[in-house]
Length: 316
Picture 1 (spheres, rainbow, N blue to C red):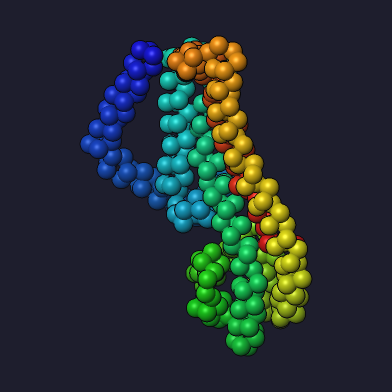
Picture 2 (cartoon, rainbow, N blue to C red):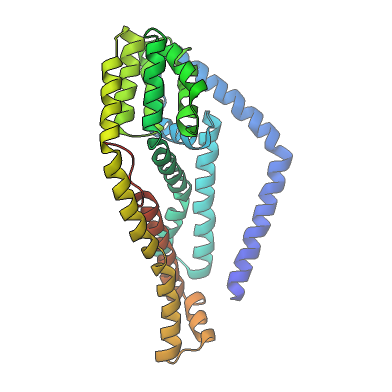
């Protein structure tokens, strides 16, 4: 326990030290980063180079979940992930020495920000998918009213959408992008981002219709009407699956903490442990810590899986 306290104190001292350094020099570092990012963007535009797939993926993930855009946010995201990995690794190695188990747990903590953003994106996509019927109905009506002018229809749909916050935000960003695009590739990227905000088959069909209407002037009224009809047909099936999943997962989510509490009761009642002895072995020995961390990690993964699966997407 003394070793744990010493390690925590060291981490706090180092954190305060780095915080002090950042407060005194942070504005200079930010200025240098902004200059480098500006130079990087200028060179990329001049050479026609694109960002790496990793950078583009993280940038899109941050944009869709936090509504933040720019290379500096990707840098901050990577910095936080590395800090979590290195700090947790330092604590574990200081307390228990070198172990593959603790290196893997530190790596898990390092990718935790990515997992959180992915879960948040999944939740946003899930909620947005249930706005499909209203979104497509409004867009179809506005498209016909606007004499098949898709750009004008999108703007009118943004104004008329109610109780559809996810679709409204996605359409707003799409509207800005399609008014600024200079090539088919840029238009395709803007529509891909719109589709990714929901991640459904109906969004992909809608995105394709928007692209064909804007890029080629194609009349997509029939496609929009057909998509809306199919969504209405599967609505009752999805609602039935959603009710069944909610009932099952409501029962399961209480099992995990109950099982851990029952393990404490069983140790005291049947194996001659005292509460003090149980918590000593659980939190003051390497094996106990490994077991507890495994329980926490598996619980997080289980709740994450339940969070994703408990409600089906509104999709084909």
